[in-house]
Length: 94
Figure 1 (cartoon, rainbow, N blue to C red):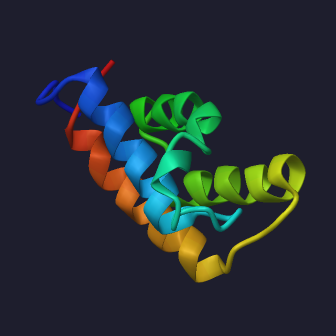
Figure 2: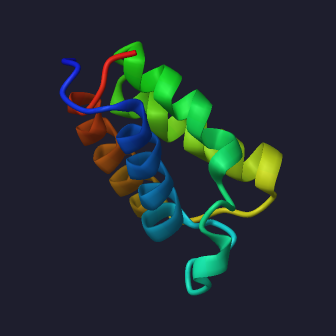
């Protein structure tokens, strides 16, 4: 991972992916709720900085869905979200 961008860009990228791609609550049709998943950004960035695998990210997202949000998306949505999050690794290294 290289320091190719800044931390704000990384936060924004994670926020956009969680809101537009993952969205287990189903609020992404309301732009006023873009911060709905912000409380999970720190954990995701931590995993990205630790070079976690796609399996680790999938597990985290599923755990958040089941144990914290109480609703679930499809495995395909979770996998595709994790894949897009992994691409953000190249933006910033804490």
